[in-house]
Image 1 (cartoon, rainbow, N blue to C red):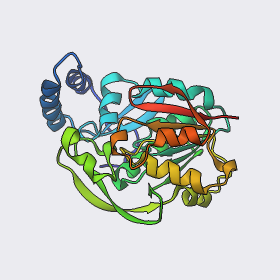
Image 2: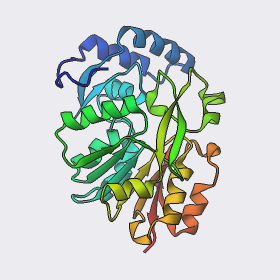
Image 3: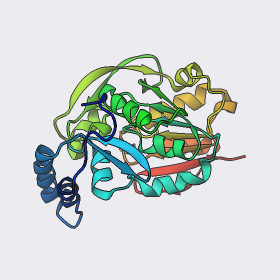
Image 4: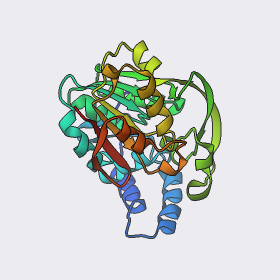
Length: 274
């Protein structure tokens, strides 16, 4: 990992892009894509400096899904989610990004004029995110390197070397469908109310939570303890790992006055009723 050399040091040449585009071709079978990805990862693992939708990223495609998508597609991943959020991301919006990864949401929101608190628990991913923030010259972004949970302490964060952005605090998720070469590291955990307070936020307009099956333990303790004035107007919640939730977050949000107003295969947007 190189977070010191200036952006532009590592060019993504044509053969690199072609190789990763081939490894990302979804008309190929999943097993063939997996074998291709392993081969391309060994040959072209990165880092590479590239731009996507006008934003600068130093990416490591051998290590992270978002990095692979940016290099293969030449654009930000999760376009449908960005489209859902765009109407809410006006200048001065307060956007809190829990599970910020390398910054595809954080940098996008900041480019729309939002003030962003980016929260990332994985130390290596947080360092990459910090580089990307600096490369874009975004002084509207604050980075908090911590995990969010219902109480302060430490927990094991599980990560897999081929997709560090898919790190999870839910050990059960590391088996079955997502089985792989997972390993844990201890990380600090704090409630969202504390992290938000420490960063001087008195309101949250948009909260995005993508923490691989731990979403309920981020959102529900916050809403149950925070002053209602601090409740986000909009919440984007990753729902594709909901079988690993301890509580049904969606029904609880609805009981608290949130209504689902949009969804994709992986995420749901909830808006607080007036």
